[in-house]
Image (cartoon, rainbow, N blue to C red):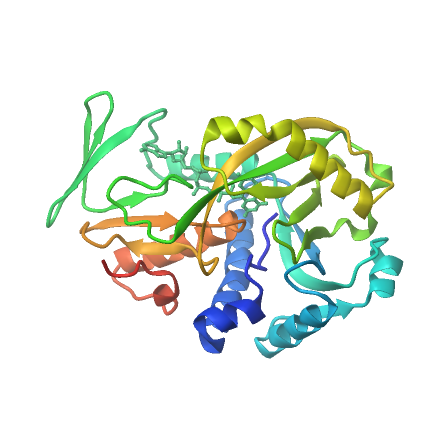
Length: 327
Ligand SMILES: Cc1cc2nc3c(=O)[nH]c(=O)nc-3n(C[C@H](O)[C@H](O)[C@H](O)COP(=O)(O)OP(=O)(O)OC[C@H]3O[C@@H](n4cnc5c(N)ncnc54)[C@H](O)[C@@H]3O)c2cc1C
């Protein structure tokens, strides 16, 4: 799901970082998914990348009134959305909950998308080494050295830690939380899918999300838990998959919930739900991207824009929204 809607509702983010900053963050995410879509088309990367509207269902974070307020806040920020009552959502999507319809998000096959970008980078001269473990980084005034587990050294002017949810050595990660998330994919069931095949997620914590795939499978996930130990995380998989199936059945009873694939992974979040992007305090010429929450793809694009702009001598107008706090 390549949602421009970020995990923290605009109304809630406004309370955390102020109206102007919250509007900037929401608008920047909208721009980011469209920039990613444009770049993907420009590079001719075929990855089942298609535009999808989304519905955001009422839940324990925003009830019907909260969703109406969220709707108004988004319109004020220039982001179009439509509030649907319980009856209207049921008539249009077959789901018995009030909702907010949003326009201009996307879905893609993440594996093909990633492979496509890596191939494009390699064609432009990037050298890719995998698997390679970086075990130590030394940041000097003008040069950064990264040491691999096999004894090699990579020397560069700038280093970007794009290590996903793993916090790199030396990077301050205050207020950064690791959680575990669970998901399943059903067998293809194109005739049972919901109208418009919109992306579905909930204003709940933890939230459930659903999307369809190119070949008519349903991918559904969520039921996040604050667990940062991989054994504990994996042991919970059967129970979590059962819980997800129950929720899925309740939401859309026509679906076949039997998993053909199931998986779990870590993800990291920050207090505001916004990622940390920027130069690492105390590590000159080292850059990091941390804490994407559920919007990894959206935030990776923003990170690429901010870091590229900085490295080429410019200033990104939104860099301050995401920068690391000083030590
Ligand atoms: C179950 C699940 C569902 C998700 N669903 C969505 C979704 O629908 N939409 C969305 O936008 N996001 C989603 N996310 C988040 C998204 O998948 C991630 O944000 C995204 O994959 C991060 O991409 P990345 O390239 O930054 O990091 P990764 O894809 O995690 O890649 C980081 C790489 O760095 C390597 N690495 C780490 N440390 C070192 C080291 N010391 N030395 C060398 N290499 C190292 C790792 O091995 C890895 O290959 C989901 C995440 C999970 C777990």
